Image 1 (tube, one colour):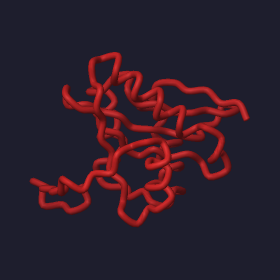
Image 2 (cartoon, helix red, strand yellow):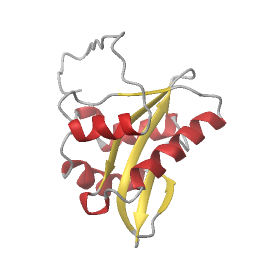
Image 3 (cartoon, one colour):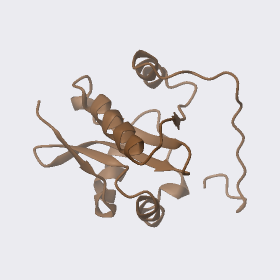
Image 4 (tube, one colour):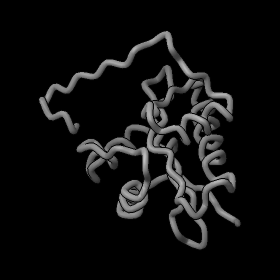
Length: 145
């Protein structure tokens, strides 16, 4: 299978949402709205990518930075295209884009019960951390932010 990568654009949102909704192991929040995603892409230009096959969006990866570290989110590949190097190519494009702006270390979050994703990242050499604990705070009081 042949596929190509390009920078994610705000007008990709309908196809992204469809892909996200079909993906097990991914939780969508209010912060995944079209407006929020467009703002995220504007703050992090050229860091998020989509994969296309025959003109159809088959994969995606959201990527941002705080200026010190990269943060990868929502890596998804359409089930029919998994195991063909799409996710690996998206990760490589993202880490290269981050490295080009001086970001050498990246983090990602995976749901503890998403065994396929955990195995994938372990296989690629990502380091599982047990020395830190994740805390979250939502100023709006909305647990779905």
